[in-house]
Structures are given as C-alpha cells and as structure tokens.
Length: 60
Image (cartoon, rainbow, N blue to C red):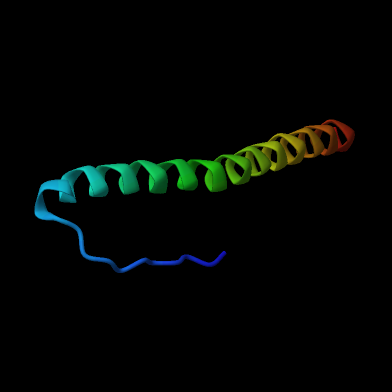
C-alpha cells in the first residue's frame, strides 16, 4: 500500500474542516483495509477450532 501526502497551504479558517474530512477518510480507509483481515482471521480461528475438536474426538 502506498500513502500519498499532499502538502499545500490552507487558510486557517478551513484547517479544521480539512483536518476533519481527512480524518474521516483515513478512518474509512482503515476500516476497509482492516475488516477483511479480521474476518479472515476469525474464519481461520473457527476452522482451526473445528479441526481441533474433531481431532480431540478422534483421540478419545
């Protein structure tokens, strides 16, 4: 992933609006990138749990 930073001067009156919108975009991007990874990990945990429970039953 490549992050680009645009450096440009902004009037002081617009600084908060600019910062707020960029924080919103950043949070949105983090969610888009993180949620699939969390779902994949959870899926792997469930699969591993099923495998371990089957292995445990077979050992008994």
